[in-house]
Length: 265
Image (cartoon, rainbow, N blue to C red; front, side, top):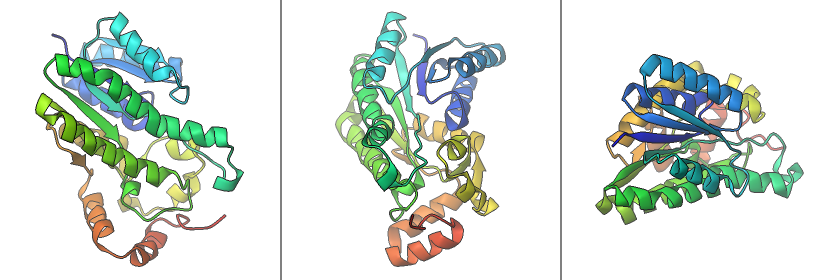
């Protein structure tokens, strides 16, 4: 049986690099994101470089029906998804009190609800096939004190970590493992799109890593069935501190390492 991986948010950043890494390991791919032009270009590049089959579907995961439509697309093509990568991102540029309820709901849907829906849709097939792998791209923000920048982001990522743990508790005995990947500052287009590029530019260089490096560690951890992946030694140490130091101290450190994180609007 051919190995297939489904990657959401595949057109750029971590999702793009995860797609390439999986292709180098022989995975055929189903790639999804909003921009079909970027998906088609990536599919052609990967097929030419790695000789695997790549199919694409343009979907906006802020829309309720998109996860089901992605699942039905895979079913219609008889793609058995052995590995599900929940990576799609969503950014909000405005302050919480100025953001519409609709935008907050879209934020929650992309980062939370769609992850649950896609996982729920594909797990029965994984059970029938004797196992599978799930990657949920979270963030070190899930361990940090609440931030003034996108105040829903950290809480949703914390929730995703717990959801990933729940998948392992319920399905590991069926050969299904879920890996929560918690990168720190990563060079992608996300920060510009979400309006926090200025804060990103102020982060010390030793704390910023390439999407390619993050993707490699994420894929290796997922294929190994690890429950948690914090890429790079820098952020492993940071998460250790986040788990063990008082929040007042963490805020002080965070203000120095990530200026603007706790600035109030």
